Image (cartoon, rainbow, N blue to C red; front, side):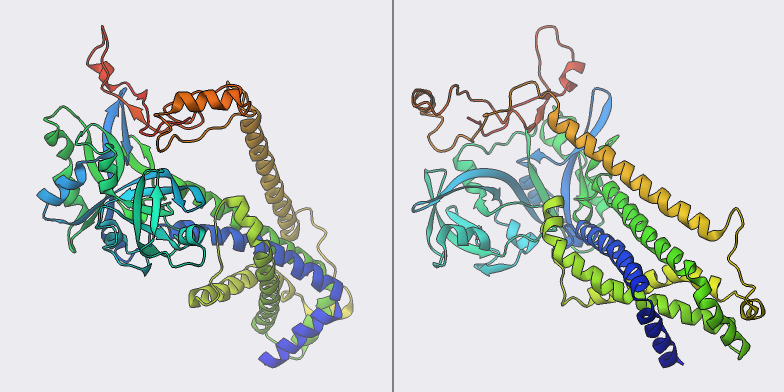
Length: 524
């Protein structure tokens, strides 16, 4: 029976080649679009779930009230980590992390890349795959851990372990570890890791409980409840600051760190998860449009299949068998469309990565991919073939064989409703796309309050601050620049906020007014 159904399905496809090409290609394009969006969604949902101990790792957050509103943020005071490790038995490990940009030099190679200060426990907590070295590679005060890509850029094909890297033109570090490049689904971004001791050596470390400037992560011991731990640490900043600070501390599971980062009334209830849900709806709409198009094309040819249905019913075929046959044909077409969709997705993946700013890859050796592919094909085939199957199998053999069968001319029919839905969804998506494009264009073209043409900046590093006047004079006198100035940070970026300021006539409530404050690294 199955072999017979398959033979009939293949014959129908070959008999109407133009129809088959249009039907399969339309479904394939819709499936390819949905696949790319679902690949992006899968990447977003897998963020920070890749660490072996993810279920016990938590990010530390602050909560306080400003101007009558409750806020939550993930920058914490530097001494928080030491206090947690020392005074709380529920803590297995604590690690601080702080991104920074330094000039890295090896011989004639000079790179301005993003690195980070990290505690020696960082590698052991998150267990990033190490190519050389181990989780203790940051234990020394002068060791540096490079990613594979960074080691390649600095040393080429030479062995990097044990070699010297000059940081900020002034400090020498020895390569003590090389790790794999960061995966696309981690919240961390760095090309190298420096020991926290270097931050202390630069004078950037402090014991102030009011200076929230680093990220703190904690690994709880097995069996420790997040709720109980949050209750224990809630007033840690208040107590250690002599009640001068009013900030409460709480934890956020690492698995929710990326998707739930937006504060509403002091609670982390939203963030990128809203975008993920929106794109999930868009993917469903695109796939639904493709399926409706398939339904309309299939039912439009109903007269050609009517005689087949009539003859089969006369010789004893049950309606259930006919439904199974038509759905089987739809699944076969969905399978062919999926193969084309995969090819389209692979071809367009590089451009899609440029669009979304990621490095998404398709893992062909992952069994879950092919399980998903099978489910995706079955779901699409069932969705696209359900209405045509029930519609075609409902023909009455007497009317069909007499030639009195006619398509419905009623004012409202399922097929007309499907056509309206198809065009409605398409128009909605087109309108939304145009609105977003106009909004992006407006953001790019609006008056920024300053002339952006020929305006560049660089971070001051090494002895640049010391010799700023000489550098400024040389740039202007050589004609390389018409004006030079320095600021506490790039004019296009907002790095941090501050509060607890006092002035003549200020009140206690004024201390909770948020003002823009300066970052640690000045810009030139």
